[in-house]
Image: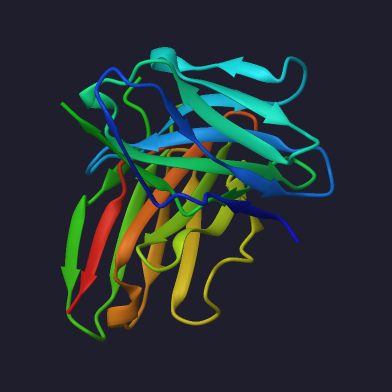
Length: 114
Length: 113
């Protein structure tokens, strides 16, 4: 069965520090993977997506993620975080014949200390 | 482009009352999805329309929940005889490919007293 695991429910970093949010997936087929961010009282916004090709994908606001088939991972990174990056980050797996089914990780709450 | 619009943003109902949630997808998008978000269960898929036709409702509770898409500009999620366990944020998303990249609305927070 398909699944997405985000092992860290909460991550706290200082402003300016680097960041890695972890994501592991389980899927026997070719995965489409996403990272979405949810700011307080707002809907989910797409940060970046991976369909195929270069395993490192760039997203908005300096975020990037690296896909690893061997590790079944899709970790999110940022070189230097800003206080405005504080939000909940969701790793998402898309599957199905049309790629229309999404499975969400539980989310990681990122708190950036000023 | 106003994005996906959901109304109301907040709804409070009494136990046993009906709740109707509205979603207006992004103009031109052919697919509409409904999700439910709770602290305990996280984000769960409910149902999916493509070109107004119901495609997959495998996530919908078998009783009391129904969804429709009467035209390409809006979809509704109706919950009859609401129960406290229905309290959640209900998210609507739309896609122009019917597939992976979905654009989400701000959600409707339903509170059942």
